[in-house]
Each structure stands twice: as structure tokens, then as C-alpha cells.
Amino acid sequence: MSRVFTIPDKWKVFCSRTIFEITKLGVDSIPLVMIISVFIGAVIAIQMQLNISSPLIPSYSVGLATRDIVLLEFSNSILCLILAGKVGSNIASEIGTMRVTEQIDALEIMGVNSCNFLVLPKVVGFVLFMPVLVAFCIATSLFGGFGVAVFTDLISVSRYVYGLQALFQEWYVWYGFIKSLFFAFIISSISSFCGYYVRGGALEVGKASTNAVVSSSIFILLMDVVLTKLLLQ
Image (cartoon, rainbow, N blue to C red; front, side):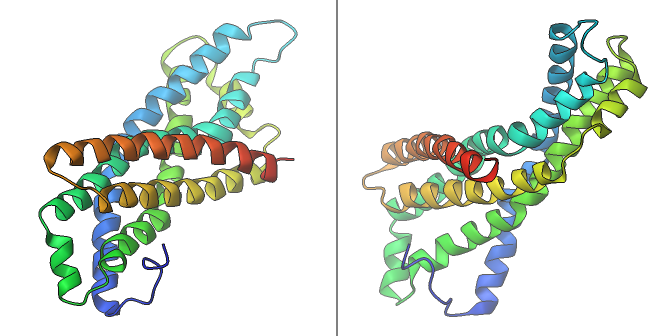
């Protein structure tokens, strides 16, 4: 990491590569995030309605529970676990392929700091764009629950919308954004590490990609516990 976080030799090259990584790792993940979020939001709303149907519980609790589940856990932790499979494997396989084809060795021979040149744009680009993915996830998840209210008779639209607005705590939104920044750094850095130190051939690249996803997921869950304790105590 000390080699990664050094001043780039050429800022123009660093900025252009960062924009490219934002597009590849972040923008290209938006369709996946939106599709998953819509269905998860709908499923949460349905399950909440089916499991808390009681005269003692107000009907707007479905919208309230859906909102809080999305803000507190799904839009950051679960989303990043999903992105670890897509983004993490992409980063590990790309850098691992460059290692086994000796492209990284060629950069070192030319006097280029390969860690800084390859890894830093990925880390910075993904961390910068992660809040955007979280915002898309929150919006589409709540829209998925709204679709359940519109197209089914499980809950009325007015009760669902009222539940989204009831007892709202702004800190929950910031809490999700803060956690996502840590998770984005974990995914990009661990995946880059797994790819950078690949030794062997194509088989080892596949193993490195798998290790990147597994390791990122474990550290995300561990950090989720720590951040939840620190931010919500």
C-alpha cells in the first residue's frame, strides 16, 4: 500500500485512467445494481407485509421497515457483497493477467511504479463512485416496494409512502454512505493485491479471482460489524 499511495508521476495519465476505471467499475455496474435493487425492494415489502400483519401494528410499518432495511444494510453491506463478485473478480483477473503475461514486469523495467500506475486509479475511481451506486440502490429499492403497493393489494400506496416518511432519521443515509466508502476500498485494494501477486498461469489467475471475492466478502462482513458498533452506538 505504501507503493500504491504515492504521488503519480504524470497527473494527466492518472486522471485519465481514473475516469476510465470509474466508467468500467462504477458506471457499468449501474444496470446490475438497479435490477437487483428493484426486486430486493419488492421482496422486502412483500415479506414485511406478510409477516407483520397484526391489528396491533400500524399498516404504514411496511414502508418504514422497508426503508430502514434498505438504508441500514442492503444499500451498503449487501450491495458491496454483490459488487465484490463483479468488481472484485474483474480487478483481480485483469491485474493477474497482466502479471502472468509479464506486462507488470515490463512497467517495472521502464521505471514505472506499477502499483501506483495500476492500482491507485482503481481504488480512487471505485471509492469516488460508490456513493452514486448506493444512491441508485436506495432509490430503486424503495421504488420496487412502491411497485408492490401499486400493482398488488397487499398494502395501499398512501400507507406505503407514509411509512417511507415516518420517523425518518437522516443519519441512516449518511451511515450507509460512510460504510460504502470503507467497503469500496476493501474490494478494490484486496482484489488488486490478489491479482498483483499471482504466480503461474491462467489457472492461478482464476484462483486469484476467487480468493479476491472470498477475502473481500469476509473483510466486508467484519468491517460491517465494527462500523455498525462505532456509528450506531
